[in-house]
Image 1: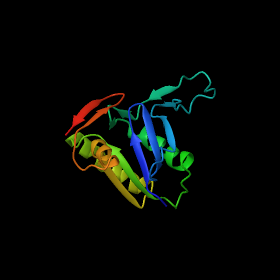
Image 2 (image 1 turned 135 degrees about the vertical axis):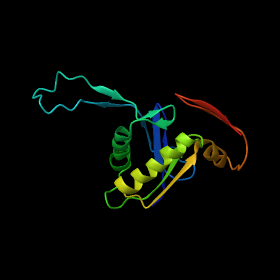
Image 3 (image 1 turned 60 degrees about the horizontal axis):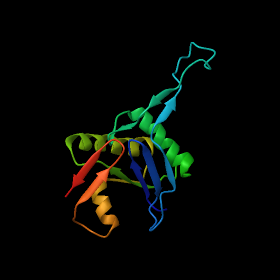
Image 4 (image 1 turned 120 degrees about the horizontal axis):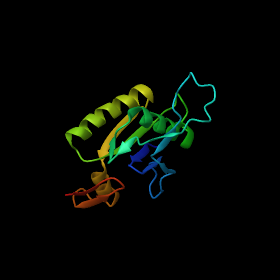
Length: 151
């Protein structure tokens, strides 16, 4: 089974199998809607949905929502089977202390909750260079919630 590549952004999540010259199999909004959980209510039709942003400015801000989003992507969107999980390449923002802490928590989530057989997180800028056959260069990353220049 090919490795799965997941690129989470503040607006869109892109995911697909690592097959050369193939676009992502799945491109969906990162934003989610949740119905508030109140077991004392019998009629939930009057409740308003709560909008949740699992990723804000490139960083995971709501881990429960991120886990739900990844579960949907892996098992529903891309057809993984429970017990037959594969490997994941995950894009992350710049190597900052905040990104390092996020990466540690993400590794724990992937191995403990999703039972992946392999996991690698790499900076988006580095992956952009690799995609054009370079190991050094300058990249400009413009997303919905962030912008950065990497040399």
